[in-house]
Image (cartoon, rainbow, N blue to C red; front, side, top):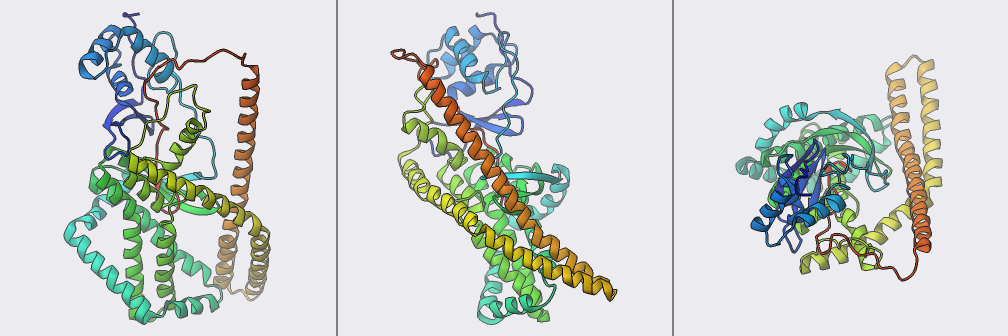
Length: 457
């Protein structure tokens, strides 16, 4: 056995400690393709030493010298076969290289993603915008944001401006265009914050989160940074949102244009929406980084299974610090009813949403016919754009229900398979954990960020 030389497959690299974690023991990160796998120190050291040159005997000696464990060659072989090969972190002579299973489509993840910008294009912009995080410029920007918000709510009368916009025919494309500009700027806020902290955004694009069309930025590289840099990345989108709102409010105050003031007001509402911590928006990732749990929902399933005794055939999840554990438990007690309530609310009101949207689309179709007959091509184009904008959330809602049904069907099949497996087990046979007390690998993490994704982190 000692002559076996394990190695890491291509795309797998040790990345060091997970900084600012909420776990009792230090956690470590291994890059696997485009995501990170969180593991305990012993598993990390094995991956680090599996360089295709070092034998099992040598790895065992190194581990005994470097760590608190006395590790034998048999222990190393067992860890590799039962823990690291299934995760796709190690290949050896006895097990072929395995690609990690793709993440299943989930209604709680950003789906149907369309990548628009790659890292080079993003970096060319974020390299310049990162200067807005330098303390003097940041302080000046926050002062301007505060002044603009005070003026909007004390002098600007945002509700009146919003009513004027609503009363203006074919106003939806114009206000939507302003909000799209603000949301794109929001995404560059995440990318610029990551760049300022020493990381790079991997991609930027659009997708669907729940039933909402969104923009996203892949800021998974933030896991390599410290907690302060991750929190800056979390808040970067909201910071840039408020900068965009300040610009719109200033322009609206100078020109008296209600569209600009209404856009500033709607951006404020979107900032409040982004801070909701129960779905994967910026507030969710902010709470995750404050607690030191990389992805709250990804950790919920394994911990619940272990708590209910359904995960006794495998290693226990890494223990959380007492205060973090209490926060996590309280969060899940609030989050699960909130998610179920949101889905139930949307399902209950879906017929009314479809009916009202159909009526609105029919009204715009009549406007198209009328304006085309008069050869008023500008208003006809605006009406067509309004029809597309009204149809987009409905298509996203249909996609959401399709994903929800698929997820429910997959869950039912897994429950049925687990019940069949349990019935087939002969009584009186204990199935021991092959890896003893070695710590479990936590769920792989990647984070899209911003505009409704984190998915997009």
